[in-house]
Amino acid sequence: MTPQSAPAPGKSLPPIVLLGVPGAGKGTQAKRIVTRYGIPHLSTGDLLREIAQSGSEVGSRLAEVMRSGSLVADDLICQVVAERLGKPDCAHGYVLDGFPRTVPQAEWLIQFLAGGCASPSPNPQPPCPLLVIYLAVGYNDLFRRLLGRRSCPTCGRIYNDFTQPPRQAGVCDLDQSPLVQRKDDDPAVIRERLSAYEEQTLPLVEFFRRRGCFYEFRGTEAVDRLSDRIFGVLDSAAEAAEAAAKNGAARGGS
Ligand code: AP5
Figure (cartoon, rainbow, N blue to C red):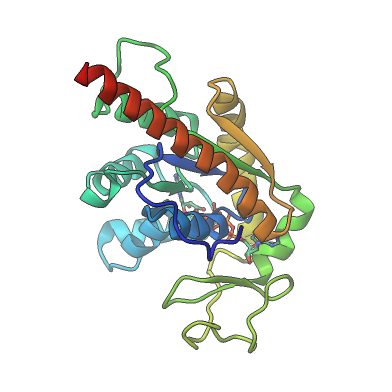
């Protein structure tokens, strides 16, 4: 089944986390998931880029951090995410792309979802309320992916000059906008981003694997085939959520 399929109607999903090294295909798959399931896409990279372009003092500091390839501070990003998750469109599920990216961010998110606030919970390891999709890609593929990436500033569609070029070079197939390259898709910054990933984000693979809410996929598969596999897991999760809701309603009504 392709992302053009009709969305699964009326199904609710747990919050979905897309985890993977820069260039693994998180943004590409997130866009397909939101099209199919009709839930919002929360890319922390996009949220931060918006703030960075706002011209505020915080924005200029953020732009500097992102240009260096480092991660922004946990406190700040958790505040940005908490604000976004409070919006009504997040009530029935969402895709988190690029968050959490450190163990403290993951702990914060689990507490936030469990208790609705960021204060420490008395339970040292609450159950994982998330569905984590991990896209595994070897480092050899990443430079080509990131250096070849181009995106449409109007509709957000992602292309790749080597693997997924637009029909006309440099122009979006969907709305004919000129495609742009991200400032941090530069060889020196890519090296920094990969090293930040190794040190701060990679530990999340074991963090989530241990909690049993973790699904690993080969991010090197063709984009459509990978989407189909991810949809298989998400459809099962939606069905399980639906069955649990029906059981709960039946118990409540008896
Ligand atoms: P962010 O914008 O999140 O960037 P990233 O994690 O580095 O990830 P990318 O967007 O580069 O890659 P992707 O996995 O989405 O790949 P894509 O689908 O585009 O973060 C940017 C910065 O913001 C960070 O460096 C940090 O400073 C800050 N930040 C963000 N979140 C933060 C947080 N939580 N905490 C602290 N700081 C934070 O695909 C890449 C290319 O590959 C494309 O050209 C695509 O066409 C191609 N491609 C995709 N899938 C396939 C496939 N299956 N086969 C072949 N090619 C493919």
